[in-house]
Length: 417
Image (cartoon, rainbow, N blue to C red):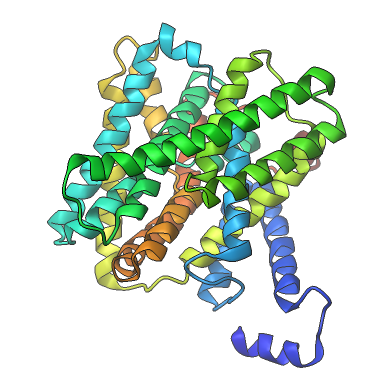
């Protein structure tokens, strides 16, 4: 692929640069493949997006550098921020007051996922300095993949809502602890405050940025219609500004967007849907995010020794999340069957995990290289396989309004549109 790009570069000189042409073509192919995959297999479109990105990465596509920096990092953070803002806006904090066991399920599955991943890595003789960041990455479930699966399967119900909430909360924990951990790598820790202070800084700055974002949007919604095109542009512009500022001041841009969505839900409790214009723009950005993640992850150093470790890590993480949800299930208002499928629906890993790994690599190139060697294949596997598992879980829970079968007919096309 690099040779083909070199030939093109000799006679194609687009105004925006050759990488822009490459990415435009790649995204067009991904959009077509995602649609065709869903039409003829019934699988969610995100599987097609990820597959195209993975094939491009394996073929040597050099459209982005690793670790992520500059515009590619900003686009990834912006895509994550858009998804997490929407996910945060779906979490009513009053729910935890009336049903605290849901919060206990979140804490249990995240803690068990961390512990299981750390134990597996140490069993494979991975150094503790590498195992701990990887265990933080293993905590994350992907709200981005899960929300796309829900959208494509038209799923709704208690398992769907609980899986989105639990995956969003696990993201909150991992972003807070992971961003702080990145700032502590290669630094000696002498006392407890050396660990607590960075966590407080990341969380504090993210809360401030998120609160400003929520208040600005709350003020805008007092005078602007939620369905207005101008409201769409204002919302996306403010999220982009918050994304750029939060990381600059030492916070976490996705965490700030998540907290902003949660705060806006409390300030403006009336249900409101995103305008159609923002939905289209966000869909393009999210598709770019999935393709970017799989393209980067596919360029990892693959080996048989890493494959066995990755397979064991994925299995341990999946079991830990299922057991964690089940342990706190009594009194949560869900049946044991619903708890099982909720744990399965939290299998996907994607952009947030890649963002954390990129932060670790930038913070410590020596340790980061060892972390990425294990994390990138895991992320690629669970972006694709996790989406399939989540689709099957929602189908088995009886919450998908689409059958798990090909939609290759005119009727299926009309339903999709």
